[in-house]
Image 1 (cartoon, rainbow, N blue to C red):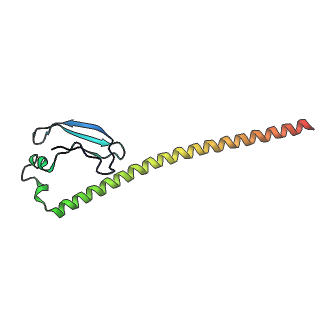
Image 2: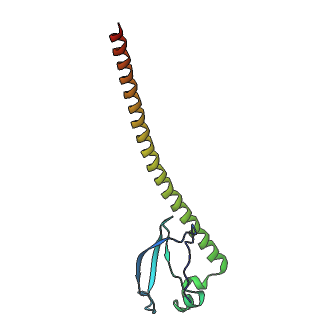
Image 3: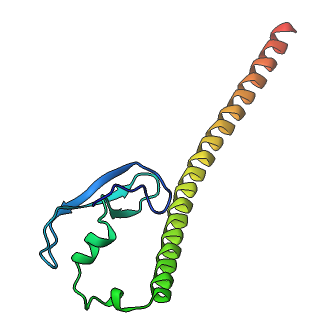
Length: 132
């Protein structure tokens, strides 16, 4: 039985459909959706097939079913590591853009303060000159 799942990486429940269609490789029945998590960007299938349904979609000689559990766990760990690296790189880029924006805003604010200080100094001098 298919089941809807939250993002496997960040546990968010906010996705957009990227693509959907039939099983083109093995021509098994069904319409499969690839979604992208709006929080972290992970692309995954949702809804997902149960283990029993999934087994019916692959032939017995499908390589991942022939490897032992340790190999599968290692692959899962590698995928998780790669997803974490991709997420960190994405966040690093976002933070870099935000930092550049904040620096530009700070420079503009400082320029505004310098201009205001200069104008106030000029006004002070003018008032002092008028008082003489």
